[in-house]
Image (cartoon, rainbow, N blue to C red; front, top):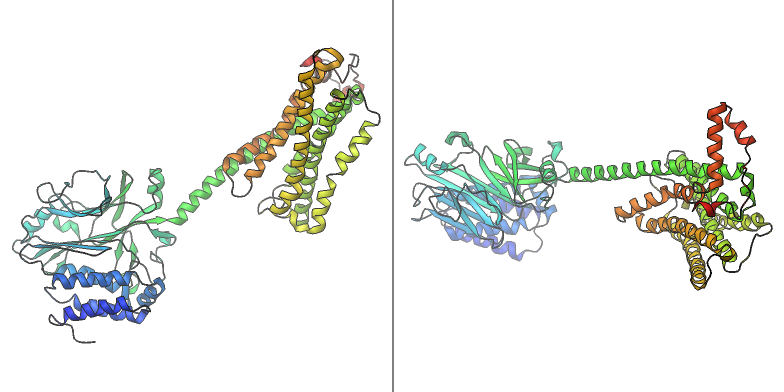
Length: 610
């Protein structure tokens, strides 16, 4: 490499830029060589503006190289960190001429330099990049150049900005009269050079930043007196440097969330043995104004904002845990009430002998029993933690019992159709004719699933349930068929009702009431699994809540519609409670001795209670 001096500098820099542009396979060694050139170049004084622009363009080209190459060069010889240091030194060495200021700008980098001893005023405080136009303007203390004073906290059109405390420029001039005082501000839109050798945006020494990523442009401010940097602001009085950033990933709608996950940092060239890394020492998160992050630091260098991705994921996990806890609570409350209601329904049928003669009550008993067993199984073993075999057993049993519940709803629909449309009364051997298909047919998809692969019932990560494929084909498909069949039956029944002229004959009024109750139960039972179709895996949260609420309260709804509103059942439990209170007899004796006094009515006294 030729010696770099004031005469050879323009040619060497221009050649380096041309080679980098033409070379498509730049290596880590090439980056190290470029860093050496820039390091030597920025040691010279009075660098021409044209050469300074070429240097910034070289920095821009290097920043666009493959990230692996940049990391390798920095690991081997601190190359990328030295390139950034060259930009800092450039502000100290560039020739400003009689104007006392210069702005050097490329597509992704801006370097603005002021010489406070020769500039027309000394009121400059910082630099601002506009959000809409991308224009760069000076920030003053209200008396000098620029379109906005430092005291105005209006950042609606600010992309990135940095500013010293008010009147600090004047204070510096007064403190060092007759000295060569420079303020250099820079903005980096490409931030790939600000990475540690490990490939992270942060130092490995600070575990709080391990999962953080750069969430802004990088902006810097540097003060030199006779070429010597002054980084500590306390030397010029009280105050701190203020930086304003528009986050790349905006969290402005949740200001507390923004503060929690964002960290104001500066680039420490000395960290990691001269490789450079982010540090938050001396920097604080000040505020969020108009969606912009405002930071304050007590020293000068390159500044940015980090976003803690791990914290963001942790917050998402916390939110998910809150929803999971809410859904779990709703499930436990709803299922507990449902189990209680279904238990009362089952016990009522067993104890009240005259209910046994009613086909509809026999159907209700089996439906309640299937739902009761399914929800007890759900509460007892749905969560994982009981071993592989137990988990498969729970999932298969739930699959079977839920299908049985739907089968009994279909049988209820068929019974209503035959009694109302075909005017058929009681059926002989009703339980034998209905129990075999209702309890038997659901075994078919369960057996098929088990025969294909037992592990298909081991699909949930946290729960004992089916994998997605059998869920669609062996569970939702049979349910869809049964739902469609019931819809057809109910439509035929409703059409027949509308065509009847006398709704009071032949028990029509009673059957209409039964149909309403059956349809209501069917809708809730079927609708919950429609919600389930949308609530699995990554579907929306609202469907998870809808499914949980409709599924968990099925049992209490059936109890309220079919059991609690039946006069005979209500009388039974009322007498039972009264006798227990009056006589102090054991509950088992009262239940065994009880026999309802009211005569049996057609399909029980349900019609009188509605």
